[in-house]
Image (cartoon, rainbow, N blue to C red; front, side, top):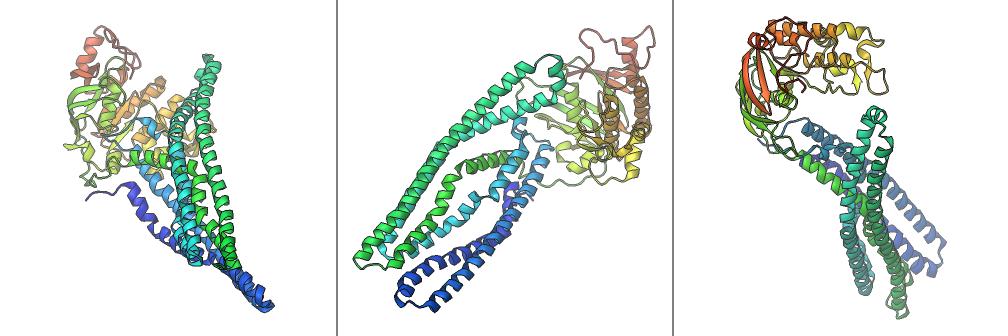
Length: 576
């Protein structure tokens, strides 16, 4: 059974509320007819009969209609706000699932750089005046039909006015489309640059890059503002033309009505009723013209969301497989990062039996971290297969796979929240499971010494933790639930000798529990805890040997301290 695309699922979810919006709109637009009818009765009946009672009853009736109109309009606005919340919830979840799920067809990361901004753009449009204009637009023919009932000439005039405003609307979309697209593209680059400057502010300060980075940021912002101003100016000109045209048509229909009244073809009340009805008929078109910029922005944002979320919409629901023992296999695996000219891993083949400990070594940019990520299921290989207990990682249920594989990336990547939240992976793990993972990572003692313990908040505004503390917390997160496979990418990069000793004990504990462990390291202590060592260079796995053989070749004359670096030949100084 295949999945519907997230956007189709969202449309199905909002179909019910939109049905209510359509129903409220029907009553609203029918209720609005009370205004021209009241005007006709006052001018054509009350003015001639001079009946105060009739005027009072008519006024009470139209007042009641306006009260009902106001109530329905408020309810419709609230329902539309609910629609926007559904859009936010459904598309937001689809985006996050898509961004955290490996996919062969994944686009480059910039598409996902500002998903919150795109979500806000779509949500705000769904609850804004632009959406209401489209909801009211189908009722314009009703008002034009009522105008035609007053007099055919007025009906033809109303049709002509609607055609002219529609043409202006189409023209506005065409002239504003390209500048808006350009503005969004430049804005993305400007936002990315600003975020990078904020993230690496310390580096910028120490290198004296403040002036040059400021100039670059101002240049990008200037490009963005220039493109946005161009789009805004064109939209403003078309909006002014549309407003002018509507006012002209509303006034001109009064003149036409007066001409018909002079020739006794129309009553005085019908003159003003026709103008009022025409204004109501043209109001949605004018609103759409005035809202072209947010409309185009919402369309661009929805297009980016569609690109991100619909790549794997037809993939069947995976079957939950038995809990894995931890047998890992790579069959001729190759993968090239988006935008790269050559593969980061080429034809890698190996098998790690359940319970074995493998260390991967090699020079900088050898592809070690890429292999670790492929084993963890982060990217899907361009060719070849990565298997867990014989099954392709791509066929595993992602939740089940996440629980079966513990992954400590080279970039620790802790998320805003408490230490407990991070170790629990923001799920419903019990306190006992969280503490057990922290103890397995030898991080429990470090955490409880913090002022807030496990409730310590991890964000820029909170008390900062050292790199070693963060690495231990990330290791505890990887060990939550005692996974069958544990992949550690430079797990001791930020650890002191005490921390490294604790990490070595952690790896030995995993080995005793028959857990499969893959490590990338350049420290002797962890290599000593390994069964085998694989060597990589330029994305190719060049050999596999036992840990004892590897250490004997590297250091035949002496036994170094556990934290010593491996004396590898040539350019094989280890760094992922």
